[in-house]
Length: 273
Image 1: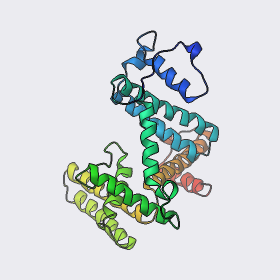
Image 2 (image 1 turned 90 degrees about the vertical axis):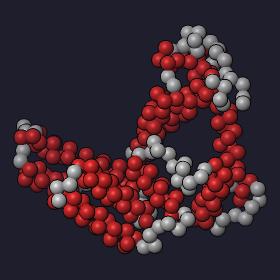
Image 3 (image 1 turned 90 degrees about the horizontal axis):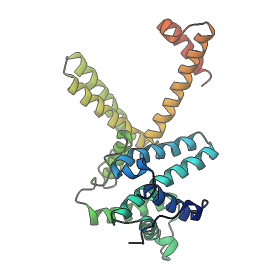
Image 4 (image 1 turned 60 degrees about the horizontal axis):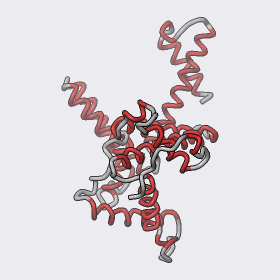
C-alpha cells in the first residue's frame, strides 16, 4: 500500500491539483484542527453522498450544463478521495492503490491497445470482448454469475443488469415481441389480483414483476430504462408545471381545479413538450 498522507498546513497545500486535494482531505480528517463532521464520518455514512453525487453528474450531462458538470465531477472525485482517506487511516488501502488498481484493470481489459492483441472490428465486437474478460474475472471471484451485481443500485437499473448478466449465458428471450407478450401477461395478473381482493403483498409482488419485465423490454430495445424513466419524469414535471402556470394566471391552484380542467391543460402542454 502507498504511504498515507499526513497533515500539512493549508499554506503548504497546492490548490489546483490532485496532491492538493489529497492533502486537503487529510487535513479535514486530521485530529489536529480538522473538521469535526468530516472526522465523524464512516464508509457507511458517506456512501449515500457518493450515490447522490453520481446522480448529480448524470443530471448535469442530461441537461448539457458543462460548467455544472465540471463542478459535479469535482464533487464526485471528492467522494473517491474521502473513501480513500478513511481506508488509509485503517491501513486498508489509499488513493494511490485505487488509481493503480483501475489502471491495471483497464490495461488488462484492453489487450488490443496495450498488448498487441487482435483489434476488435467495431464497438459491438469490443463490448463482446469486454464481457468475456469480465466473465473470466467474475468466475475467479464469485460462485454465482449474479453475485457482484450491487444491491445498492436503483432497483430498475439493477433489474437491467441482472437480466443482461443472465442473458450473457443464453438465459434470455430471443425476440422482443415475446417480452411484450409477457408484459401484457404481467399487467393482467395485477388486474386479476386486484379484482380477486388479494392482499397488498400479493399486489406489490405482481407490480414488481411488471416493472422487472418493463426493464427487460427496454434492454431488448436497447433503451436504458433508468435514463428513459428520468426523461419521462422530466417531461411530467414540465407538463404539470404548465398546468400550474396556466391556473396561476387565473389566480387558482391545481387543488382548486377539476380533473377535467387539468386534463385539458395537460393536453395543451403535450403539444409543446
